[in-house]
Image 1: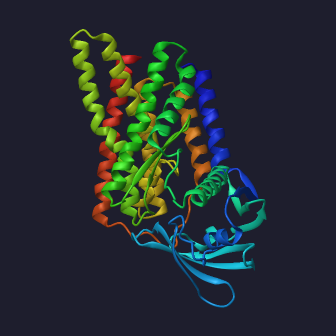
Image 2: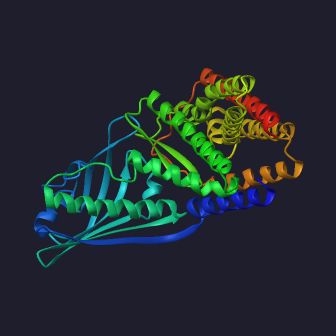
Length: 416
């Protein structure tokens, strides 16, 4: 890719990350409404957490009032870090039976109370024709549009599933967004978006498809790590242009778990890169030049993408790992500087220009600043990591970095 195209791609990604994760958009209210073909009183029993049909979606396992002033304990079906259902204490206000209520979350067993400081949820029911107009609202303070958009689609899905439940009496889990076919479609769209950056020809499409496959393999490593750490489920969400996200089935329980899951994205591909290098060398020796070049491109993309994820940016895998294994801010700063210096030295050895490497360092610094406040604080501190586990993860980090570093150098020698 030319420097101009690279700059456009990097600027686009930085702009998207800023809009999705960092831009302060303040207090915002999402409000959605839909007419549901069911009697208002029956719907009240479903949407009021203390109603007889409150478990219609399987989200609420039980609810019990704690006092006469609206305080209620709600047991949710979502798993907490200990594998048990999350408990939530909520206060209900402005309650008009059969018509409306509002709810504030006081605390729960998963997230720090600061997460719920500005959150407020409202439900309104109004008879309309032969059915009931259901209006749901959520108010909260947001940094970045990502969580705002997520909540919008979550509310939209809830209304759709409520409508289906009212019609059939059955609740169906999941939806089209996380369906495997939808994710394949998002991956294909991601490849098509990347295609122009590699040239609008068959070779460019092949490179875009290879890079998309590399992203999928990286997220597959995170998913495998989630399952190894005891998560009952894990899934992958493709985000066109930005890449993908692996999501576990419950919150993290320990610092070792955070470090292991973060490292396994690049660690999984570290097993594949030497195999692909050997396959490319074999294909070249047998005279299959095109296959050898495509395999070399796969090895190069896999190595470069994964080693870039190990750079000590706040939300990148490398930053996640170092924050768990470094015992203090001074050690963390030294380790981060050393890892970033090793990355830049590797880039120099691979043939990248000093200007490009300086720009890359600036981009990583900007990314770290953009994402450093995007995390969600858990209710209780994660379990500490043992000293022996610190050294195990540190050794694994160096090994993964070395394998991908060799992959970058080997591929640059073959392709540049």
